[in-house]
Length: 317
Image (cartoon, rainbow, N blue to C red; front, top):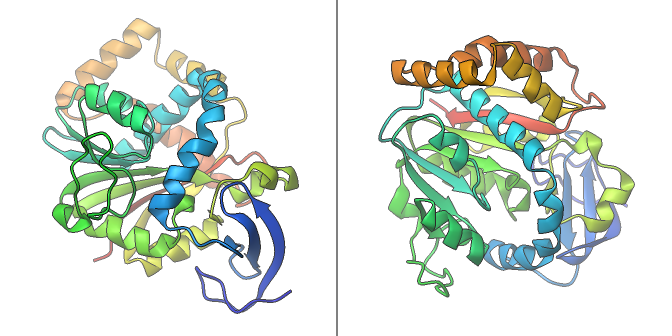
């Protein structure tokens, strides 16, 4: 069945089929033949982002025990995200960092390890995660993006609007969240409006190429991006790509251990990190990230081991 046009590239070669969605109920799954983007359009119930995020918290609660089993893997993933960011952006004292949907502790744990005095902010749907983040020194400024005056105040969370943070953040972290927004291009535009000049957004989302048919049974995403559709979305939102590629690590836990061994023992690793942070640069990205991501950049799009699509975005000039 053909439908009108793709929500990302606006191409008219779109195929659709009916499919159940974990949160939205029965949906029409639209797949673009041009950019490969997939969109879930609910047939019976319309759900705004703040409603969707609340439902997502409820649906996702059963995954908490499973997520705890992947702590080491998550640590590696978060560490590699920070290394990629540091390769394109110098992190310094006094910068404002916002993470969208970080859960707990999000990427803030890695930022604290840099030794820099940063100001942390989060927009998080889960009440318990917000509480833990606030205890961790993170300012909770909303329960859903985009910020509006309609925020639920069940935990005495002050209401803010997106306009309160125009040109405010040096870094915005958007990991595994962009595909939950009803209008991703519009959401990207709002993120870019919240960046200072020279600020960056780190995007990390699931690579569509690893999604099997069985994945759709428990899917909670509204949109499924391809590398091509993400490139188009960034450009349409007024952003410039500093980096985009797929990430391909078959055994990330072992890769992280090998990375540490490349520059010596754990003690030496920590010593070098502390010294270089004080000097205002990171030796690890220079020694390992270049090697790590140069390998990634050589991989063809659609590599079967690809797990993530990662991008570093700034405002277009």
